[in-house]
Amino acid sequence: MKQILLIGIGAGDPDYVTIQAVKALNRVDVFFVLDKGEVKQDLVDVRQEILDRHVDRPYRVVEARDPERDRTAPAYAEAVHDWRRRRADVCEELIRAELADGQTGAFLVWGDPALYDSTLAIIEDILARGAVEFDYEVVPGITSVQALVAKHRTSLNRVGRPVQITTGRRLAEGFPEDVDDVVVMLDAHNSFTGVGDDVQVYWGAYVGTPDELLISGTVGEVGEQIVATRAEARERKGWIMDTYLLRRKP
Ligand SMILES: C[S@@+](CC[C@H](N)C(=O)[O-])C[C@H]1O[C@@H](n2cnc3c(N)ncnc32)[C@H](O)[C@@H]1O
Image 1 (cartoon, protein in one colour):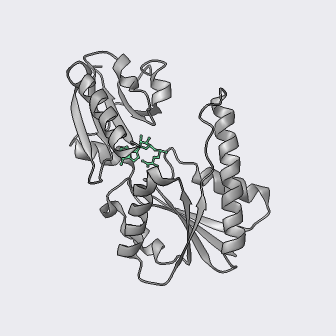
Image 2 (cartoon, rainbow, N blue to C red):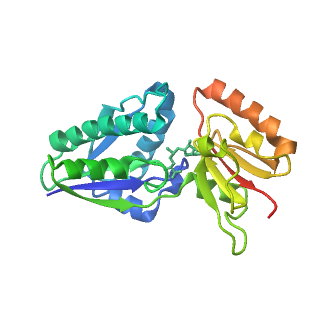
């Protein structure tokens, strides 16, 4: 039987890699890397640094081109579904062609595999198709959400209160009801600017990396500063990954 490991590597700082992840990394014969193009080269570099630092046995790295998502398609869910199917095709071929029976392959997943990441779903899709057989395990990692609140020295929830994790796309439809603490990920459009001036925002970009940016205050105080900082950073580096916690008065 082939063995696949989905290893959460944390959301930026190579020191976020857990001891369990290091043990898992040292069971791997072949690492599969989906290359997202030059703008994300920094992310590939972090993965390589983790392997250089923590793996002390021979291994192979096999790279494949990550299929592009059609960001212009009007039907969002269909476009994501199509993208996932094409990624599953690529991953299935990697597992079929590059891994022998009895060997262990791994996908290094940014942050934690359970949070806004499609690798787990893709692995399940491939198994459901039935063309290749393998067993798989998930190794958890430090998410960007944990890294963000740690850097801001704040908690995710308030005493006995719920917290919700959502996307910029959802926040743009309105502040969620029945919850006052909301973490927003995958926001390409500064959706926090519409939530009200007295909402507290804890914002972070490239958290845990040398480019890390952190800003906090009320939206009224720091909203424009975040918009400007975000635009400047995106222009300078060519890509941005940012997350924020919004906290309104109950
Ligand atoms: C596809 S999701 C992957 C999340 C990842 N699995 C995790 O556990 O954090 C990508 C989003 O995560 C957030 N993100 C990931 N790494 C980050 C970092 N170092 N700093 C700030 N936000 C980050 C951003 O909101 C980005 O748009």
